[in-house]
Length: 264
Ligand code: NAD
Image 1 (cartoon, helix red, strand yellow):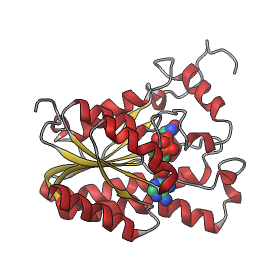
Image 2 (cartoon, helix red, strand yellow):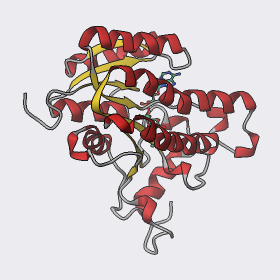
Image 3 (cartoon, protein in one colour):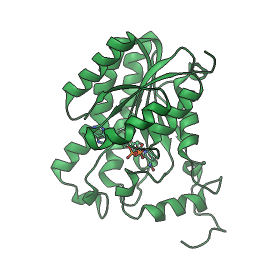
Image 4 (cartoon, helix red, strand yellow):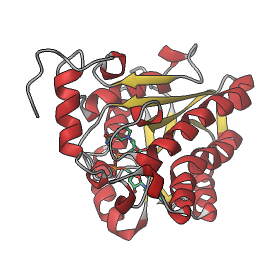
């Protein structure tokens, strides 16, 4: 085959529907000739992921709830049985109780703190450990983060703390895996209206704010995050590791509200 991802095989975790960031990345990789495997979380999402897998001729690698480590083991055993080796992994998974994605960070409960960190941070490390065993030299891992890791964003709360830890784990994993040319990076995506984002308080306001104040005067699309994700998974980026790459229409570069922005 031809394309920037020709001859590469990988698993994309976190497709919930056709608005998922993971789906944008899956489409971009397939367009460039990659062979894709998808996982899903539970029977309800399986019904949505199955027809999407058909569209990309993707391998269904298994039901995976990352709080259940055996289900991660099973996915990687299925991938090894199907392909032997893999070349890339996408982790587009996060969760926090939506009752705590509003109001004050200070009110975070211990249970939700631990659960948010487990699903949104530890799972990437758990996946990396399993992926390493069946990954070709020169492979690539990618996770998704948000600017709320760096700066305080309204309502993002414990998820911001989790994303900061996720970004730190990208750097540690990059060192752990770098000896075999395996790269580990994150994309810090601008706000996009997805299922997960709908749990965040006042998300429409956040979208408008980013539209008015980012250099490009608009929000990013899942397809744009998909293309940038494909770049980080491809051999175009063999010199890039431990990086948090902002795909946010430039929003993170701006230090002050635009003078000419309309009111929201
Ligand atoms: P989404 O709802 O489409 O995807 C979130 C995925 O996480 C779903 O597929 C869900 O099944 C999965 N998930 C949650 N808990 C899980 C568990 N216990 N086990 C396995 N899977 C689980 O939303 P999205 O916005 O595409 O989110 C993907 C990633 O992008 C997340 O890490 C999110 O934080 C990040 N992100 C999103 C935005 C945004 O504005 N949408 C911005 C920056 C970063």
